[in-house]
Image (cartoon, rainbow, N blue to C red; front, side, top):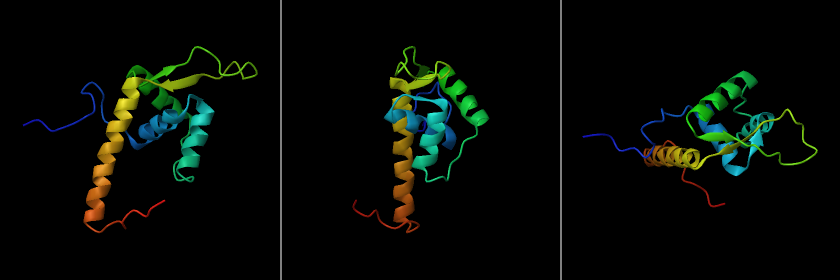
Length: 121
């Protein structure tokens, strides 16, 4: 019996760093430096990607069809050298599947009393 998976078969598993990049782009179209800062901000500084790591991830996500480079500039006064990236529908689907998988793992950890119950916001 084949294992159940929501992630399309053509995409290899996401690394944690790749998932963080997809999460950053799930909010808005961003250029490379803004992705670095968004990941650092959302993880309270626990995840700091180097530029080399980031651009390797971007290259792979582009090749896998999970992100695309935007053609239009968001603002006239923006630096022309910046390249902006957008999550594709497939990228959003893969990120959502990974988030659901992690949610199940966290539920198991809570059931095993490794984590406290979630506190209401």
